[in-house]
Length: 492
Image (cartoon, rainbow, N blue to C red; front, side):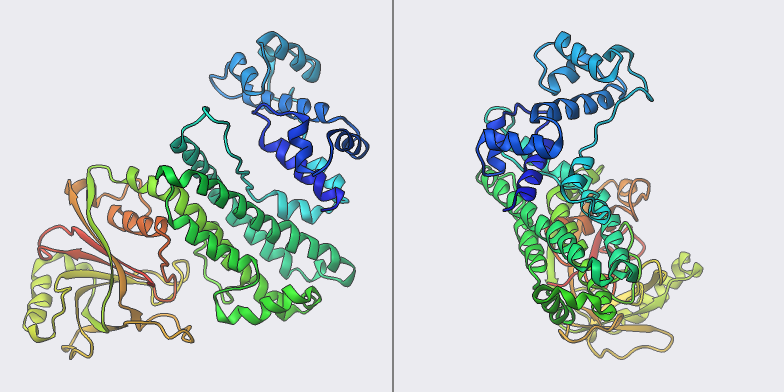
């Protein structure tokens, strides 16, 4: 590890512990050097001592905290490791020019860590943009006695939720940068390799390793969702140049073995992919390597915070059972939902016809509303809903009815979007207040959709979105009663 990396690691450590007790030995250990040597190098490069840097950062953050509603000076002083309110007030006044009680917006003196990072890295503006804008959450074991294991895990989950809100747009910016021909001239290639391979990929791998080690420490207490380890395994494979998508394996291998191939526009297009938006659902023509990294990052975050979301979303209702099913090939038969479907006579006509086809029924012999986007992203193809039932494969289709076929397993070389869909899905049965179970306020779609999907995300189960995505609202007691079950497409 060179001295630039050592100092960068030390600065990162300081940033992650500004509200903790911290001493010079702990910091110098991050750079694998003696305390005296580290302090000398730090002062020469940064132009200030380690102590000055820590004090400036704490006082800068303290001022921002004091601007928050109901903030108390004594609480902020303790948070940033001042023994008394008096010592904090003196230091604060020297730094900002006004006492803590009189600080106002516009008077805050900000001391940014980014200026130090840029100076160390030679002023790489793109490095700052693409590396520092990711939400990097350091994982360090809390000192014994401060937090319970459950509280430590909750803290990690909260950090992951913040990362989920920030990282998707940064991945899209990374895609833009890779596709910008002006950024990939020969004289920028070495710098770009450092940015992408070390600043992004290697740093995510380092964060994953620290997260994995931290969670392994907490695992014996039973607070850790085991699905996070599966998500980390998948993410590490992708970060190591072993993408699961066979279309990307060759181009990723080229980039990892000889970065100069990034001069080629065609290579960069498959590495970059296209922007998929803040929710990862925008339609694209090329789903590239960076898109998969974006999905892997999200999967880790979902495994950490989504189980708690699922618990909170069950307000007035609950999941009675939740399972995954792999069905044989089957066929959905039904009719497109129109305004006329509010008429129960229309329902009776549809299901009366299907009732007469008993020899073709499956174990899923329920009235359902089947929905999909014909394999397109939600921003491209609107949802289409059909009333009907799941029948055996090759069931004759009555006149005036529509059908969609399902296969038991995807051909690994089949990348077509839309039918045939996969007969693999999550199956959730609910009970509780029917009004609560069917409201839409506070949900992306409505409770059964959201809770079923979020349970899958929290368990690390792949939703084949968008190409084989479908859902079905299930009426266990017939279409003339409220729906109480839900199917959500999966790839198991």
